[in-house]
Length: 315
Image 1 (cartoon, rainbow, N blue to C red):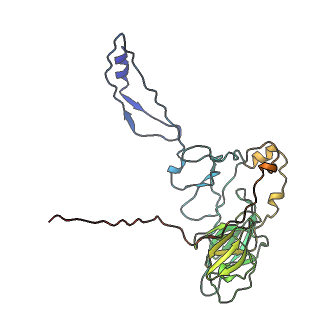
Image 2: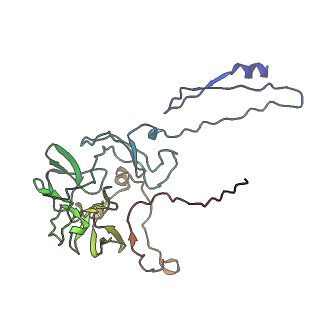
Image 3: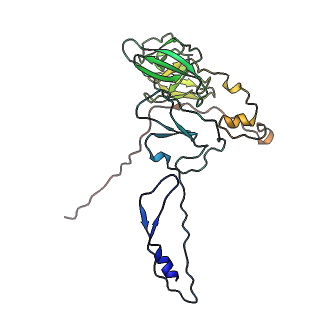
């Protein structure tokens, strides 16, 4: 009777709540010989439910906070996003424990690439609107030039109706910078505060993007520019890397009182218990010297290993 029961399950169809598999798995069971001393053994099979959002084109993971559906071309429309609550979108495992919940929001696509002409007059854009962005700590500005409209991060002095310029020219003498304009690091004088700085030329800003953040241009060495971060860490960048003059808006973002755990959950963070206290006494941290300067030249490619080969012939 057991053999007839096993032979009745000749085909097994597997379906998933999120992903539907069109293939049906064909299962063949071996013939069992049942005696008084042997018992049939059935193997338990578990189907692991993995997240399959990244299998579709356009979805991009942003800090394990959200999955955003980006279109093929740039747009200023609000984009749909999916909250991850600190989980990896591929494995579904928890990566960041401090994230969870949050109010419903839409994503604004901010263009971090501010590239201007290297010769001739700079490109000029007009600020149409300054607005709040729920996915960032600083405010964003809607700017337009001709038929091109885009979002950029707003600096502290930007106002509606102002004109901002972007130039890629590096003159022999340093220019007189204006807040909100974008220039290469090599064109700015020493002592200038900058934000939205590129690590690599043409890849877009990735340094000093939070509210009120800034970096200081401390010196120039040849064709390299040395930036000092608020943590006293120094970075050596190429002089062609673009940067925005000034610091970002909403500087008092970190001084706002949250007030209750409910609002912390509404902001997208899991409430924590207790007040943070710095380690002191024998458990305190040792004061160490500052790390050396990080030299950011270009992305490192895969190493090519050269192996000498010796061929011996026998004729």
